[in-house]
Length: 145
Image 1 (cartoon, rainbow, N blue to C red):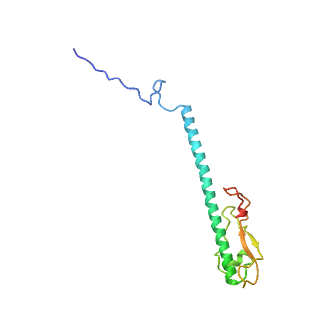
Image 2: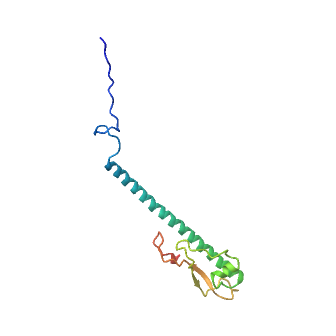
Image 3: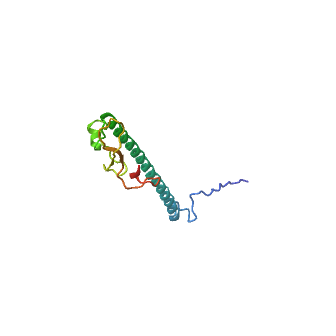
């Protein structure tokens, strides 16, 4: 008596109930596309905030550098600069930086009548602010920085 052993094939995950047709259904493709679009949307929002935060950091640094240059010019020359271009001409700045948020050179200078030292002979620019009317991530206006 001979026995014949038949191996029974196990069903595979890729086998479908439609006669063994392989592939993805439209619903599966739509679900995958929906998940991908949600992930891409979240990444785009995070990227935009990161870029804005970096531009704000550069703006703060530029304002601090220009304010320091104004103070150094005033103390060295015993008179305040009359414009930001005076700082460039006297080599306190290499150039007037471009506003990193609005991409314009629209700095708002404050002409003050205060003096930094008793030997100061004239007044002029004593502060600088951004001319950008947009709001920062913390809700404050860039013009108040």
